[in-house]
Length: 223
Length: 223
Image 1: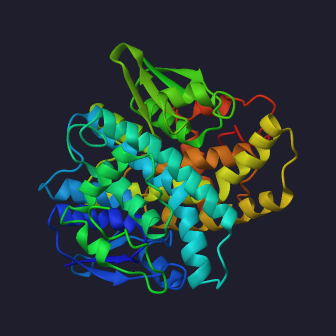
Image 2 (image 1 turned 45 degrees about the vertical axis):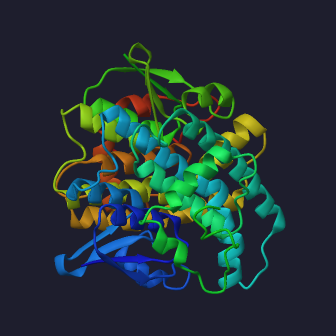
């Protein structure tokens, strides 16, 4: 059985969890807090980051969320999330990078740092200037998301893909941390409500990170 | 004909150039400086980053270096650089992430910021504390590289792969900027000398970024 080393607000682990649920792959969760269990995590993944997908029976430990997702796509045919022509797959991968790097660096990463790491690890208050900048950056990203939703069925084209799962995973963490204001982003809000209503998404919405409460709308599928 | 939008010290563009040379794919270079031509670049790639690999004849513009490399691997069979079992491919991709994210964030990115962007764009001197930290981080990464070289033929296993090209691309930019001290890293130095001697590497070593001189050893294959 696969074991996924992660913590509830890791957006990269959420992406892997969404993909595994969509593909109906069984796994169990192992809670790993990189800022507390760094050394232990480094034994599984030299980079010291979550997620790690391990199968001790097969002596296999996969690290890096994109490497893990590519592996799952290659080895489990059910519900492909990286399909189509090579150009279509390049477009899916471009959007994965845009959300895993751009959105994470501008929005999810700063929010996690200010509202989770500072609170749980450093016992410090968040820097309100950083929070404002992250929320402003979120608006810029949501404008682009609006445009994608306006011009395509799903983010990367006609089919639900790993691009949708990646974007929804990042946004869900930002939303949990109070960083998403949907005002003026009806297209994105509608797309995200559809994502939230998928069975693969439900376990994520029900989970809490100790000491950090999400806003009331977070787990509501129609909000 | 492919056009690669890049600048000489972009480590992600260097990775794509190495892959295209190894696979013998013809392309022409288009010089694009993201900090000067941001708007123009954003029309090709919403993220505003290099590299972009475009073919105007086919109305195709691929962005994100990993998406571009996966596309080239899927469409050009010659000299595969992402081959083997799914687990072997996951290991190649893990190392690509380790160098494109870890090494870049700790070493190449800060060096580019301090020694290139501040000089060419902001007309400011580099922050010597940041440079020392980047060089210290480089040592930590080289220790891991030493271990990889000690235990495998190539970084990800028995075959030359995109992991070697990625690591060499990042290191070559850090080396150009004077950030690599090989003392105590004989294994890494030997591996890098082999990489430098490949025909695919020669054009990179001959190129200069205006206003920034590399150290004397940079372009020497046996140094």
